[in-house]
Image (cartoon, rainbow, N blue to C red; front, side, top):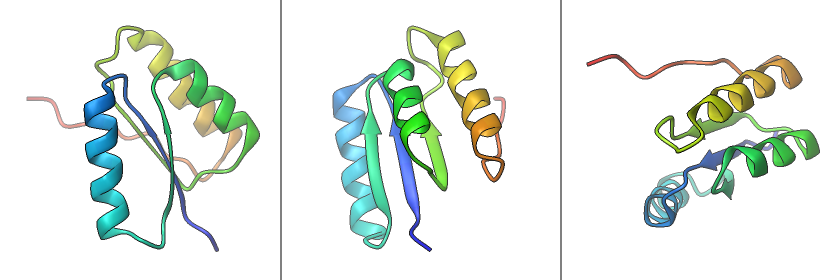
Length: 86
């Protein structure tokens, strides 16, 4: 089974750094990137992902949460996990 990861972040520097790091340490994982919740939703509607890794601190935070909930609804194997509170 192919493992696919969708990485979502509005900061292009973070998106590039994280995707390059993941590709280095997880060469067998297919990584797609998006810079906003809307394009992430389009990608989710068009394909299946094993993991969705998203920045919560984007300008459209409510949209980000909606996209992640939609991902969970579209793909039953997707689990929503929040980062620990500080």
